[in-house]
Length: 254
Image 1 (cartoon, rainbow, N blue to C red):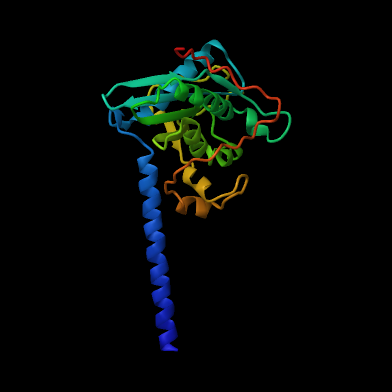
Image 2: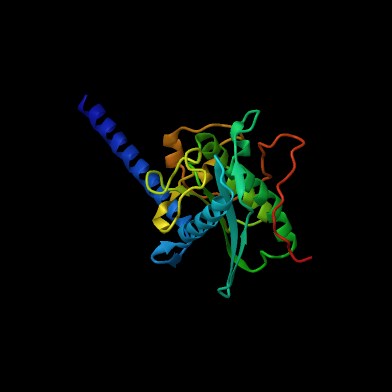
């Protein structure tokens, strides 16, 4: 009996150690998604999200709207220290008439823009000698559960489009309770003056390495599988047949 209890204790200790190691790996992976300093002690991604938030709010002031606005950007970093920024158009978000209703949310429309633009950038050799491609997606309202679930394969899919694993995606929103607002009650929004007014939305992108398309994951498993993976596969899509890609608003050199 004592031997069985000792064996059980050993197994429990081993399991706990494994879980702690996986959790530590998840934390390290999450931190690796955020780039170097963007000034004022904030990461590049947070400062870029702050910039997107200010640009989006400036647009909202001239175009009041009772729903969401969102914007994204691609920033390409090169070994010589130069970087080039490609911002997306500012997209309205609204519920689609047919499910999934989130497919017309701002974040999904930004994803369309990215899927369309990255192969063109690749063909134009914009990624030649690039050391990193950092994609930041910003939403003025809280990212909905449907979008969060749909976002899990995005980094893998976009890496496939750009043909590189040096591509990193982060999702941001206005900090609830601080900068957040209800667009229906405040269609003109409110000023954004501090980088702390944008909040990182943790999405377990690496989870897509372990799931089949459309397969759901428990929150616990999502937390434990925050580790990197390589990608060479084609992307899946939630767009309905016959839908067109968004105008990317960018003219690339021919």
